[in-house]
Image (cartoon, rainbow, N blue to C red; front, side, top):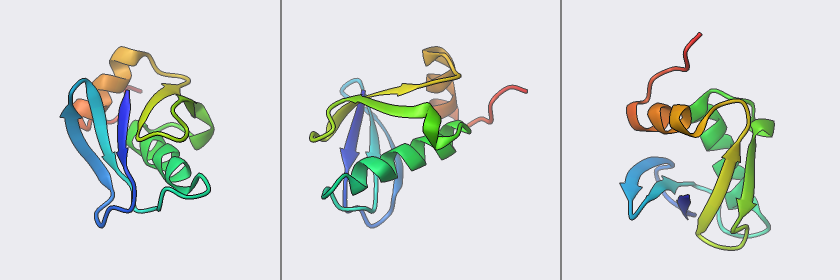
Length: 88
């Protein structure tokens, strides 16, 4: 689960709260721009192409369920928690 804060001055990962990864994006929550920014930010943080990141549920909400192809849930959590590059 991801909780998005659109229109943030400093985009980036903001830690974990209430079982969700908090993410700040600079784009406004209009016309899907915040969703696009979220996908780009997560793809960069997880070292996967943006096409591998998909919003499954919550397109119009701040809380979203996100799926990332090519990595396991455990690997995704490890990368987001520790900021480590993926294993080669």
